[in-house]
Image 1 (cartoon, rainbow, N blue to C red):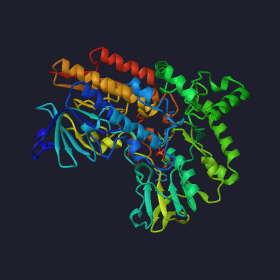
Image 2: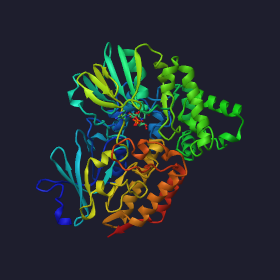
Image 3: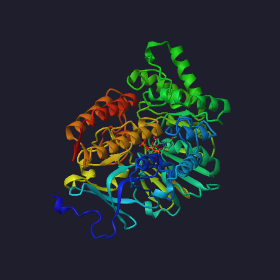
Image 4: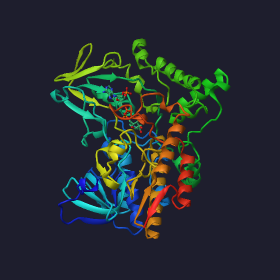
Length: 542
Ligand code: N01
């Protein structure tokens, strides 16, 4: 078996050697580099983009903004950084988040150890040396003892394979790979496929510029008004004075965000009380709408009360009853990610916007002038794909990762990703994933849980080195038990009940397995216990 596998750096001279490499320089990669460097290791990070930022570097579409409030969506490892950085809005825009990322890269002098414009093509584990051999798209070869994948959960764009795509004579865009110089849609006719978060944020702004915007909707989404506003200095001062308590409180919340979780069941209160609670949360403008009652994500009848409240709002906002009817979502609210918007439903009252339901009449082809559905042809000059990502596994799948005995990660994960804690996968020693499948990741406030992963990995590597050990690898029984547990927890909720990217259902042929772990506090507790027990569930070899 081993002899069949070509080392990733075979035939290349001048292999650069590191103690650790970090793949990606988004929020996860930057902090990982910082921690490993402070451990005294020789570390190098490789990043495909020309600058740091990961998802915030690539997703530059109009209206791109975080859906977690900025005072929470920020690093907490440095109290000085936390105190000195000033967010300007309740929900930060992509340009502001990118400025923050660049500030962090400069403040902690990280750039000197990052190689930009560089993609990892292959990573092969050499059992004889217990090192990872890496092949980069620059032609360079690198060897490292530890390899940390900070490749992001939503970084591999999903471009649907619609026949005729190359024949389109206009310009195409994907929200996840937006041109850095921006796009001026003034006076253009535009077609846009998708109605997820990226579409819901960009549609109102594109509609303000375009001569006509045609939106192709396969599944109507639930969205809550963001009620974004400039941050009040007194509010910021108050949080900064008590930032540690604020963060500590968030760590106790199910999703690691302050959603004011109410444990009362939705059907245990009167209709008036229930509607008043939904109304208060609709006015508040946070994803915490779903925390209004304790059973919204557990019980279908409870869920329907929240779903119907949002449908009622849509009927009230959208003036044309026919268009409103098309915009009414029918699936369980929350089992696809809830969206936050600024004027999304209102945009359908504009004369220059039309909505096409592709669920009723699927898109069959891209034509030179636009799109063809089963019923008719549509023409436009620009075509925007707001079609999402091959989430959680897509970025790793694109790299030829081979562990012990030449096993490919892609093959191992063919029936769904298998990890221990979302941090490691058995048979891939000394390789860690930040926000990997099987960890809370996308069902948490990403920044804190990234930090939790980075801190755990740093402590783990320090432990392995202190033991004078050669390698650390998740054991198969521990991994099997964890995968089973992730699945069991998911099935106590309504999350697996619709065709979401959490399940891989948006990618044709992808295994349908619920990927994120639900529950930040028990997850953090489990990781701490594993570490306290000398990395229980891992095999450490000398
Ligand atoms: O992607 P999505 P996204 N024909 O997968 C449709 C985060 N995020 O980029 O639902 C026709 O949600 C697809 O239809 P359907 C956030 O976690 C955060 O919008 O599969 N339609 C869907 O409508 C979010 O959840 C923020 O039936 C097709 C859309 O395209 C995640 O990223 C902002 C199609 C894709 O929606 C992904 O969001 C943006 C086809 N062949 C993103 N293929 C904030 O922080 C796909 N679709 C606010």
